[in-house]
Length: 383
Image 1 (cartoon, rainbow, N blue to C red):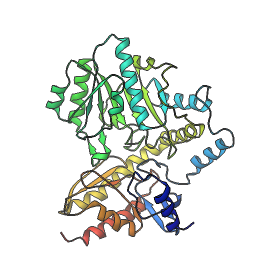
Image 2 (spheres, one colour):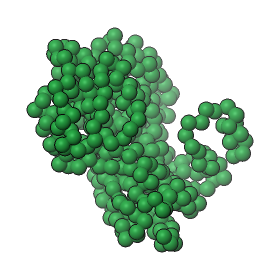
Image 3 (cartoon, rainbow, N blue to C red):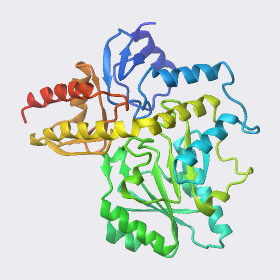
Image 4 (cartoon, one colour):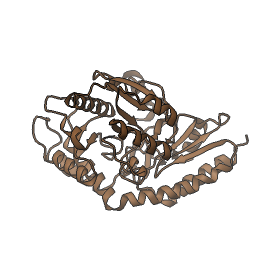
């Protein structure tokens, strides 16, 4: 089937909820994706960070193939050896007590909210508000409100946060990196001061890392960069190396709140997803985290050279996640199109920002090739 036929089928039968590039990808290998005409593209999107081990990764591919021959999935009504093994591995690797696996980011929000509501009931705590720290607007956290809890938002500002943390707030949700908001990093001072305030108020601390990706900042979780320990963390993107799986991890007494009657996620966690997650975590523990940190420093050292251009407003990032914010007179979409024509895939997020989230397996020479192509485009941009 050629590309025009694929597009026609998509137009006729699919409900398209994402704007599509004029590109159809058919296979991947290493850090590269190939289209239906076998043109190669260095992938700096990696499924919005999902495909953290790149493509055709030998360990991941073989583990999945082996598991497919045994059992793809089964109901949550029965014990699952791989799910139990994954829970043990992720808890022993981290400071968390228990894990609840699910199928989507939305599921993690429902699970976390249910845990908060039941914890408050168990503690005879009448507080009913979850405070979300964000400068975004929208309905992302509405799913948490369906648990008889009120949702309020506050900007990541120390004075505003102090005022918002009133006597009805039972939990606070933080996002250490607002990925969709131009890869904005939380300020170190704000994270520490707000953490201390939550502790003083006896308020539950929840970190939303679903959009960041396990290991992407060079530590297993982004909150580790601040030397803190939340009560709950929600994770999703990258956990299965491209295979769909998400989780809510908790520690302490709140870990005892969920019960078999709390059937929050209808999505069955497949043995394939558990297998993939085990490979990802094993890879991170076996030296990949240190590689991500080193490659991230190298990436930022290259990107920082673009600050000399008057159309580059800011450059932000941590580990293998970076954002280049452009001024309004140079549209990020235009740069992405130019890079695509040169064989490089980039993404755009809020604030006219180029988002770079390559596979962890990317090499320094591949980073160099991306930098050189972008440098050439910037050099030829006369604004």
